[in-house]
Image (cartoon, rainbow, N blue to C red):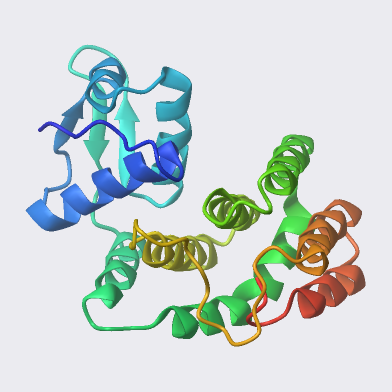
Length: 235
């Protein structure tokens, strides 16, 4: 099994995750299939160990792969759990013609549960990660490509805090679907097809700061207010 070098557009981590998931789905790889060692995968993708480690954290969180130590160890396909089948069902929505707006509407319905979980279960490391992602988002906010990708990385990281495996898997795969659809046209800047939507407005940036602040506070009333301000289609 060989992979292409990770593309430099968008997020390299997202590119690695997408290649591995699509390869498992497209080739119907069985549970226990061995991809190789971490070093071998780093060489194939042309990435640093830290970048691969971040991609593997995402994949393990989704129940897609597992790492086994010792001789003959490496990275393996996990058992096809119900969560993995759910993830594959979301991935197939593109072929069924589902729209980005439909996905965003479903994502919006899950936002309060995701942010509420994050406010309850966040660790100091989670908060540091969210601060770093928020700072990065502010830096690239007016960049039509990197701004939207940074936005979705923040949403992913918030969802990863939830201990609810079903909620986490469904939300993360919806985000991946939306981010992938918006990045599909490499000749045009990604944009949400929402009337009146301004991707890089200062008001919208402030709404994301409010989400992170609400998670840090642990206050559920503040969480609900931040989610409501965030809006159903103004992400």
